[in-house]
Length: 238
Image 1 (cartoon, rainbow, N blue to C red):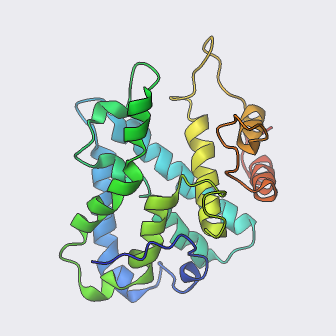
Image 2: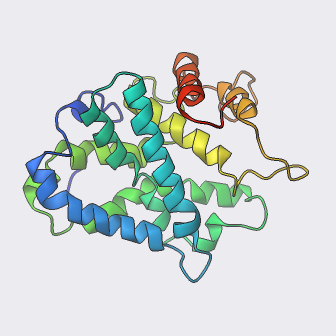
């Protein structure tokens, strides 16, 4: 099947409602349930990465981005379409070419290991394709399957400076994913065992210094709106 790898999905994601769309209701729901079962069971018996870390992370960013979109005034159907797509954005981490232990290392990953982990955005479409091998053409041609899912799978770590035209939807995907990934208490122990504060994370995501990890990643206006949203609707903020 051919995917539309276009990161600006702003218009496409408004063109259907996943809750009512007949094509998606008929075909996608069962497939997405199988995909989620794969994510939840990934690493069981080895390091339980799927149930302990991956599935909770994806659930949090799906709920967070849905609520943030509603806070910004986007229609409910857009928020639900987005929720469904971002919830499997890390599907590539379950690709067989990865040794599952790479996702839970006892030490900081090496440069080589970091490079390999970044491949999950490329490998995700391969995993998705296998779930869609027997899907009807009408599903394969649906914008949710052909464009919105691929955009989330491939583009959720992209700096805005790399693609200024990615669109607001993918800007939000990158922002919410980065926040949750950095604030996951299972991952952020550093220094003398202290955890990163929300204020620390805000400054980190501003990327004001040339050496900052997130230099050029986010628009300050959108970042400020997100932290304002968390201040109003999430308990653990600033």
